Image 1 (cartoon, rainbow, N blue to C red):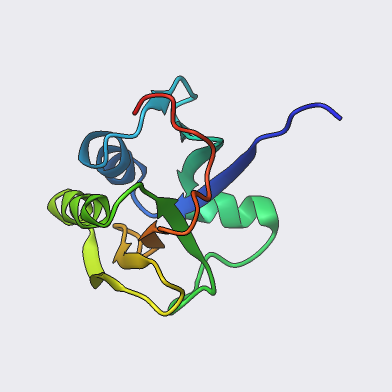
Image 2: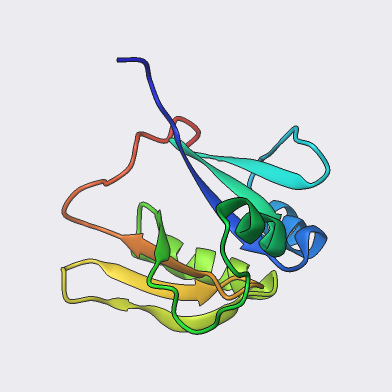
Length: 138
């Protein structure tokens, strides 16, 4: 089987604002892409940003909706202090702190922020095992 990569695509209300949040605020490396979409490389995956109405139209559904969407994107880091650092970085870039970093029932440490469009991101450290691919840059 050929290698595959997963991509998460978020439908955003203000593409330029979201690009600034992820590229400048969180420091994600942006890939070359057409002007109506932005792609960022993640360790083992990609993140795509696309206009909310355009993404809904592509899927054939209404762009209207509010409340919890039933999904949270997890960002795993290598220490409890890194959880707090990423949460602080996100907030300083314009995110809303949803839940401060704290010990959690499954034995790790995590917290949540909401990006400018309200998408939930969990920032987590799992001391029992590393859940992502090896980060060659650390």
